[in-house]
Image 1 (cartoon, helix red, strand yellow):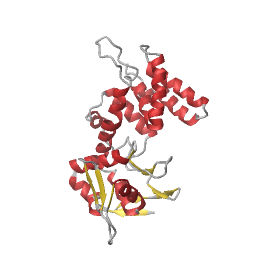
Image 2: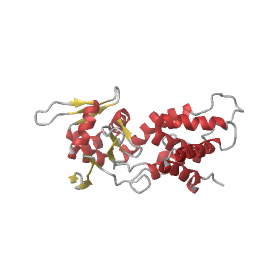
Image 3: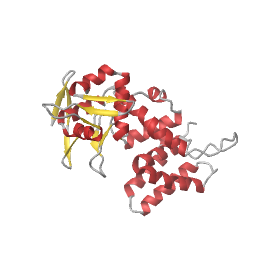
Image 4: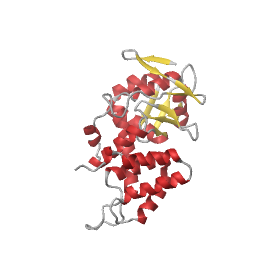
Length: 269
């Protein structure tokens, strides 16, 4: 299914998976249509954090304009590079609208989509006499209507929407994650913690992306076994990869090993 949308008759190619519309995406995290490294650094990340996030999104995330469904549940619409779903997805749309209202209106507002930040809310105006809806119901309808789905995908091609995705990801996912994994002590001579190098941070981010809190709990348990040792976060990643391999989850184990061996994440000389 091909949708043609303004401006310039942009084409959005939709597919079907398990009875639902999907858009695999066309705007890679690394490429001429994506934010630059300096723009990502401008969101408040350190250099190792930015390198780690870039690597994880490039190899294991989605394109910025991808629109899919949460595979375990099959009911949660997911958008963007991480990808975002539920309240974070709505927050990213609201953040984009706040900073670029004209672009938001051109892509989504004209189709009856509206969002607010405080409180976070998504509203979809009904068409042809149908009632309006809000929240998760509205998100589901975005993914069920081909034109709305295509317009949400097209929104992911806007630089402002891409940066909004990243800002919400950093604020609502990565910063709480980093705070929870930082050392408890604030003493000046305390170790910096297991997740400070780009490689260890990439392991941490991928674990959150793939396994959420359960995976982070296991990773932190392995890190505590080597508290104070050099590269304890990377060693924890090796232990988690071995756990996954032993459990028969070879693909997930291989993803961690790819990060642990990638020259992209090596410390600079």
